[in-house]
Image (cartoon, rainbow, N blue to C red; front, side, top):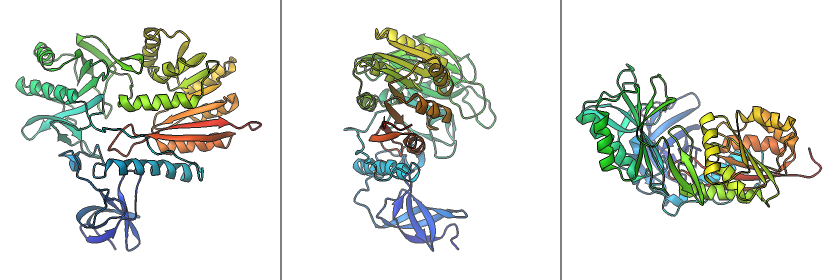
Length: 455
């Protein structure tokens, strides 16, 4: 029997979709943190469960040529970028294989061609949004990121994947908290004031929003904070207090109070401008977002004659990209604030043939269909849980010529593709895009076309 703290030589024969190395000891699967397929390691067992064990590398017998030194000093403790021990090229190969595995195992789509992952030329400092939890450390207030599967805050001065301004804003707020003895939130007692510092940066416009997530709308010495941020942060356009007095893991509350500047900031993707509020969803990697959206519109095959449904449309980003080549675009989104922003974004960009409906896609689309509204092309960009069954059933009945599926989760993508494939939609193209370098996450754009004479 394998027991905790035992040490074994393990040959790594594969990797999980989370990036853990996989080997076997006495027939039992052992998942080895930070190991790469093809390596041979000496590893210590740190956890034993019924069907598998987890181990940590003690030393290397044989290293992979794809191993590299992580650029982050707290890489092993933070866990946010769990693939930094691989070369960037290897991470792209790994992500492509994750997509292939899911399409074959879950989707039953054997032999489907998956394009190489489109990566970044410089995969650093790519995030336009940072969320730093704040808490008490041994020597006072700290801010950083949560360690994996815990709420232990790993303090960081800077993060290699965040915009430099985000780090600067976080460090400035932390300096203010320490200097003015502002109480920080304690998750165990639910006492204290400041919970998170959230920073949003418009890469193209340079506008910056700093959000203090607090248990109260009243921030002591707030004028000092405003002055300090104005002095330190280039492009500062908005300072907001977001009130969240509830327990739990949800970062943002529903109430926002603007302390300085505008209620929203603006960014530009391609030729289009988009309004970003404290609560609105906006893709976090603008360089790759442009790649992703252009690919989605390319796959849509628009000629100017089509009616397009953009489902789970958020603030209307893909909708407005598609509107440039479509006769009409109908966006559907469940978050009221996002729908209002989408309408303002359409007006801001002088696009008058895009309409936006508020509600769950599985409720709105069947109703639109009952009213006689049909799409020639449907674009779906659902959350990680994928598309609702009722929505898929309605799309199959509506029978658009093409469905473009934008996915952040290969497993639910494969599940939904299986349903669509079984109802007459043939997968034509699968293009992964590396939206989140150094993590195990991968975005995909898939084109599925209706096969004639099949329901």
